[in-house]
Length: 115
Image 1 (cartoon, rainbow, N blue to C red):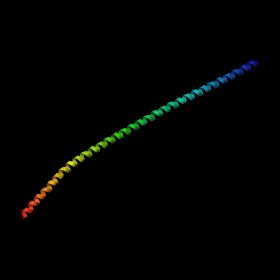
Image 2 (tube, rainbow, N blue to C red; image 1 turned 180 degrees about the vertical axis):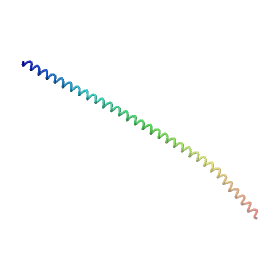
Image 3 (tube, rainbow, N blue to C red; image 1 turned 90 degrees about the horizontal axis):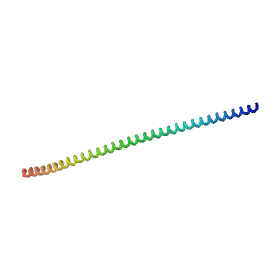
Image 4 (cartoon, helix red, strand yellow; image 1 turned 60 degrees about the horizontal axis):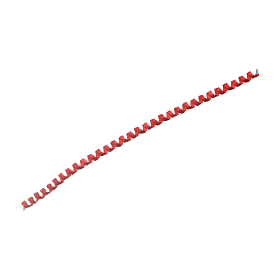
């Protein structure tokens, strides 16, 4: 009888140890799963962040490209207008000088006629 009790106790302890091992391994699996999830979350987050930075960089490039284009356009317009201004000015200056000389001549003529 005693033996059987001791055996029974031994079996109970064995069963308890077995259960404890099972629980421990379950906790271990749970921890692994959670870490994997954390890892995958981290990977997803990093990916999202990378895409966000890429979009930001692309927007910045596009903005600077437009800015340069606008700047070139302004420069082009300015030089065009300067060119036109130069032409206008050369025309007017030659015209005005012609006008002045004409006026002088006419003035001289007027003086001569008076005399």
